Image (cartoon, rainbow, N blue to C red; front, side, top):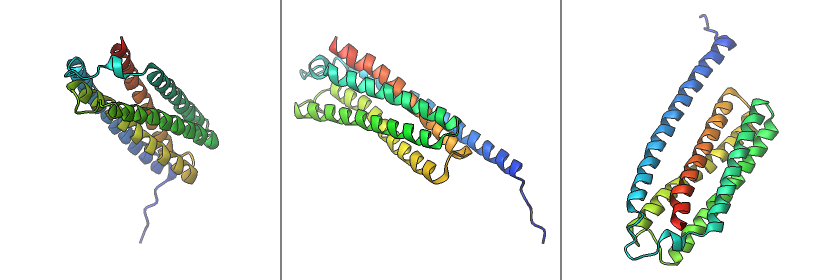
Amino acid sequence: MAQHIVSPEVHEHHTQEQESLKTAGFWLFLVSDVLLFGTLFAVYVVLVGHTNGGPTGKELFEIPIFVASTFILLTSSFTSGIAVLQMQANKLKGTIFWLVMTLLLGGAFLFLEIEEFMTMVHEGANIGTSAFLSAFFTLVGTHGIHVTMGIFWCIGLILQLRKRGITTVTKRKITNFSLYWHFLDVIWIFLLSVVYLMGVM
């Protein structure tokens, strides 16, 4: 019985087609996320003045905290970009190192965000205090959940790289992860402008 042998070239072409389809699916996911955050921003803008006699952003937001958070997240976006450059140069150790740096910075950002939420709740400003705070916790919390997802994604990538090295599949995953992380960075810039800076002014 004759066996059908697939040449390496055909197999590689098939793999690249699959990766292209997965990348297209990833872009659709990002578009849906843009719509999600756009809706949450619109709700926040409508409800920002509805404090129900409770604290306002000017009373709650601490400038050193959100400035530090911004610096950390911007830096993590830079390190994720370096990881992609290292990957393109087929430098496995460099790719892993810069992904680890991105992971640590993402964890530091998340820690500051959780600390901010806990401080606000301790001061009596929770999600049920007013419409403003409901919109705030939902919007900023959704971004935080996305950062958490990115952290777990990054951990998975590091483990895959250690096991399989740099392949067509891991290249696509790292590139998509970096795009996702840059996307979170852009969303944070909008959060910084619309929520925090306008809140303290």
